[in-house]
Amino acid sequence: MTIQTFDHTRTLARELAARVLARIERQPALVLGLPTGRTPLPFYEALREQTRVRGTRWADVRTFNLDEFVGLPPDHPGRYRAYMERELFQAVGVSAERAGFLDGNAPDLEAECRRYERAIADAGGIDVMVLGIGANGHIGFNEPGDGLMAFTHRAQLQPATRLANASLFGGDVEQVPHEALSMGMTTILRARAIVLMATGEEKADAVARMLGGPVTTKLPASFLQLHPEVTVLLDPAASPR
Ligand code: GLP
Image 1 (cartoon, rainbow, N blue to C red):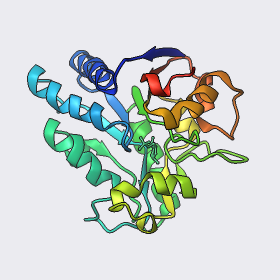
Image 2 (image 1 turned 45 degrees about the vertical axis):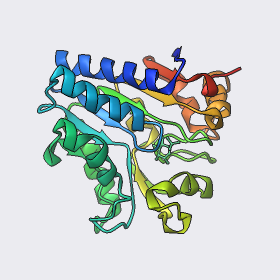
Image 3 (image 1 turned 90 degrees about the vertical axis):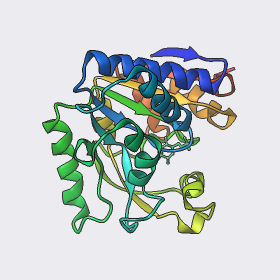
């Protein structure tokens, strides 16, 4: 794994945005895997700004979001689809047909997970998968436990993860769904390149274990040690001491 530490989250976000846009300019039909959460917000802001300045064309880019809540109404602002529209897609011009999402309202959720795996394969696989990390070491909604799911699946959210998502629900953890659909570990590890961003002190322990601990289902992000092309971008607070 390549580890890069930046003096400020904004510097980190700008650098990653510049790398992603340069890649899109070289490879206009890039397939991107994208995360939600608080960590990527400065990255999406930098993508919006730099896209405007550079005039980068997103028309042929395809995206697949990592995960989505189960059971939220289509117009609910807490849906990750709504987050992505707000934070990135409207500003840079990623149309609904080119933005892959799991549908947490699909009548058959297992079939929906299979559809997503096929859609990613039909797009030629993910070129660059951008990830955040939960304070408990989760990636996507692959939570720590006795086992991990390989492919896109239905996931039960742990209390800490629901709490971490409460800001999307007006700060009310009771409103956060108990279930989500998520890419699995193999779905993520099949990406050709992976970039993980971690900022803030509350991520330092998970980052240290991800980088230096054993590969274990108790810390799903540790599986990234098995991938040949992972870059970890950190701010000083999240860096191992
Ligand atoms: C959420 C998302 C993850 C994200 C993580 C960290 O539960 N499903 O994809 O990486 O939590 O979120 P944050 O960046 O807000 O700390």
